Amino acid sequence: MPPERTEKGLLAALLDANFDSLVTPKLLKVFYALSMVMVTLECIAIVGFAIWVISMDFYWAVAILLILATPLIWFFQMLFVRILMEAVVVRFKQAEYLRIIKDKG
Image (cartoon, rainbow, N blue to C red; front, top):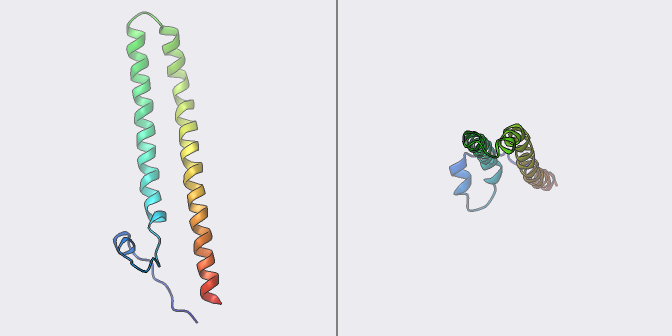
C-alpha cells in the first residue's frame, strides 16, 4: 500500500524538486481574490469617470448608461474570471486523480 501523502504548504510545494506537490491550485485562491479586487476597483473607477462626465453637462446620458451598465460589466468580468479559474482547477484535479490511480496500481 502506498504511503499517505501529507499536504505541503505553499513554500514547501514551491521548493519541491520532485514535483510531487502542485503549486498552482494553491495560488489560484490568491489570484481569484486579487482578480475580484481588481475588477471591483475597475468598476469603481468607471462609476467615478461617469460621475465626472455628468458634472461637465455634456454626454450626461451616456454617463448615466455607463453607471447603469457597471454592474453588468462587473458580473460578466467576474464570470469570465471564474470560468477560467474553474478550467484550471478541473485540469489540476484530473492530474491529481490520475496520480491517485497510478499510486493504487
